[in-house]
Length: 467
Image 1 (cartoon, rainbow, N blue to C red):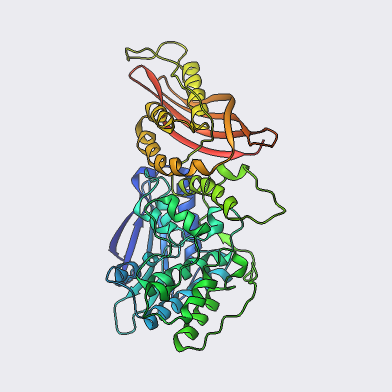
Image 2: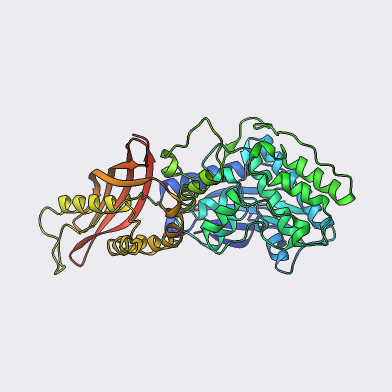
C-alpha cells in the first residue's frame, strides 16, 4: 500500500502531495519498475485538468513522487450528500473529458475513471482535475484483500470488455465516464450489487439503467446519452469522451438527438494500457467460438473469468479450475521442529499437491475445497484465499466446463530449510459435454513455509498459458 503526505516543495514556495511506495512492497522490483513507469506516464500528460507530477525519486529504499496538491474535495465525497444538479454534473463531465481526450491523444488510457479520481478545487471557479493515471494501481499492487474498498469502487465503473479480457481502447474510458455521469445524476451506481459477481454481471448482462427512471428530475434526454455511453458493445458508444460531454451538454439544453452509429477504435492512435495488470490472462485459455457473437448465456460464463482477472488485477494471484480432488499434505512430521532431510523434495511435493488442489474445484461440496485450500495455507495467502470463496461459489455454477488436474511439476528456485520459492506447472484436463477433452498447462509461482511439521503455501501467483 502507499502513503500520501502534504509536504512543502523544497525548491519552490508551494505545497505538494507526496506519495510514497508502501514499505511492504518497497523492495519488490516489479512494483518499483511499475511505479516509476507510471509516474513517467503521468508526468508527460501536461494539461490543466490533469493533476501534475512534479518530481520522483528515492529516499533510501522508498520510492516517492511529488504531485500537485489540490486543496478541495472529490466527486465521490460530494455524492455522499445525494445527486448533483444536472448542469453541475455536465460541467464536471466536460472538464474531465478534456483531460481524458488529451491522455488518449498521447496514447494513454486511464482505465480507472470514477468519482474518487475526479478532484474539485475549492474556489469560485472550482477547477476540475483528473487524478491517478495508474499510480494507485502501483501502490495497491500487493493488497492483501481481493475486495478492498478501492478495488470495489473501480469495478462499479469498469467497461464490459475489461472483464472479458478483450481489446480495450479509449471507449473503456468513455464507458467509465458515462457511469460517473449516471452516478452524479441519480446519486446511485448504475449497477449496484452486494458482491463482486453481481456487479460484474450487471455490466455484462443487465439492461442499461435510465437516469430519469431513478431520478425523475433528470431530463429524459439524458437517458439516450447514458444508453449510448454505457453500450455493452464498445462499437456502439461515443467515439471519444468529448463526444459524450457534448451530448450531455445538448441533453441539458434539450437539443440532443440520438443518432445511430458505430464508433471507431483507435481514434487517437495506439493507446497504452497504463493499468494493464502484470498477471492478467489466467482465464483466457477457455475459448468461445470466434465466429458468433456472445449471447446472454455465453456472457454469464465469462463472469468466472472476469472475477479471476479482477482478483489478479488488484493484487491477488488466483488459479483454479473444476472437478474434485482430495488433498493430503506431504512432507515433515506431525510434531513440528526442524524439517527432516530431503526438505527440498518434500517442499516440492507439497507444492505440487497444493497446486493440483488449486486448479481443481469441487462442484458437489465447495466447502470441502475451501476448507482444504485454507488448511494448506499460511501467512499472507491464508488471509487472501478466503476472500475469493463467496464469488467463486456463486459463479462456478455458470461454468459448463468440468476440469481436473493432471501431472504437476514443481521446482525450487530459492530458499532454505523452512522457506522455499517454487515454480510449478500443472496440466489441466478440461471436459465439456459433447466436446473433445482439451488440456492446458497452468504456470504459477508459490512460496512454501514449514509450519508445525507441515509445508504450507504462503504465496500464490498464477498465470496461464495455452499448451
